[in-house]
Length: 580
Image 1 (cartoon, rainbow, N blue to C red):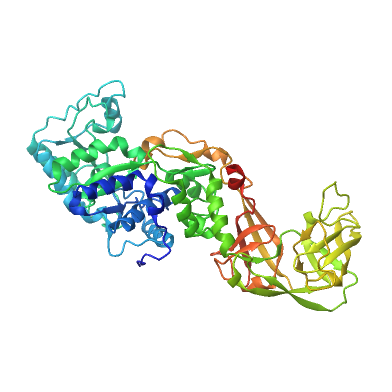
Image 2 (cartoon, rainbow, N blue to C red; image 1 turned 30 degrees about the vertical axis):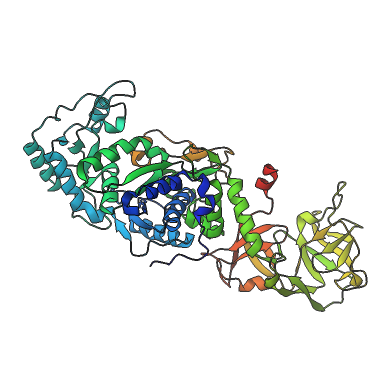
């Protein structure tokens, strides 16, 4: 299902002056290139869920099309059936729509072009520009050379065109085992760019494809399929991240030798690296498959589905992508900027409520027993149209355990013996007595309330230094509240892969990032008390719990029978403080 572009979709033109991609496009349009067309694409590999880094590319590609009245395709580069699943295809579409973008009727797959791509490979063979090679992967690495040493030509490089055509046809017919042969482009084994040293463009893989089934047993490599798919779709500006800069000569070589007429051009921008965040689909997959998290949509995950479940908004993510801009130099962005964007968005939208996470009973000994009243409270002081609500008040309340100390230090302005505090939207109370159990643990606080200090009362202007949130014990709803911290403990590190295409080589080196998982990244509180109105909260609804932070009713586990809220982000704005 597709969605139309919403009116509130972030417009990248706001940062156009610093966007070098847009400057290139403006110059192309001035010169009349591409028949004055702008056509981009977002080309994910369906081998995992999208993460926050992909949001930057989504906003850039779809946003560029919006900026220049062009088009943007969604194309799945599904050339590796061993890692691809329909689940990933569906999740990617959902994420893009959630961010507020649409591909309209332009949904494509590289697998749509398998026959055409095979024909391109045959054309290269006929031109003497590709050959079937029998070297093993290890032998190929040895022949490849190094950054300082030229490679050696394969002994199979000079096979005749006819022999190569016959062998390639047999590869397609399934007459060889996995890894027994590959098709390689014939370029230059002495090139300083290792990607140009006769790269593999087709490999044998007897695996069932999620779309084509068992129709094929040979599959094009990403570096072969991607530029040619761009050309087939008449893409004008192929925008990708900087790790593909060294792949651009191969992109151009394939397009130059196989495409006539208008040709796509590749442009690179800096990917998003974010502190405390895993920015690698391979590593995220390890977290899921190793059960370090509950799934791809675990609220601690930086996947868009995880962020959505946690309570992030698409507006906040688009704002974040707009603020970080588009540049060529790689840099690491502090995750607190993302949190700042989220706070700004939620501050304007989220309804204010009261919730007590670690309850401590307070009994107002001078409040009439079996009495109750309803006090007015604003829903959002930032939104005059949000109105107000009535919250119940009674003799027995709950406050936070941390809001009371029997022997407080100086400048402790919350509740303590003989001290007064104001209850938000209600009265001033004074602690008269502490009740403990046989173990010496505090079980109740007995207080008196001043009935003249309610809003509108004769002493409503009375000043005290502390204001506490609370809920009425008899009216409160029970809730489970999940508090989240960063999944990765390293403050200044973003965990990324150089290229998803090199997963096999990368995985040869054992990752130690699992040792850096924060064991306290989730805390589940099961005895929380919340305002009774939250019993009607719908999954996905967002609130500011006064003095606690922003929370979201979990989209999977929350129901009217069991209230479950995730803390989206705290109230402390670290980014604003650092920016001063």
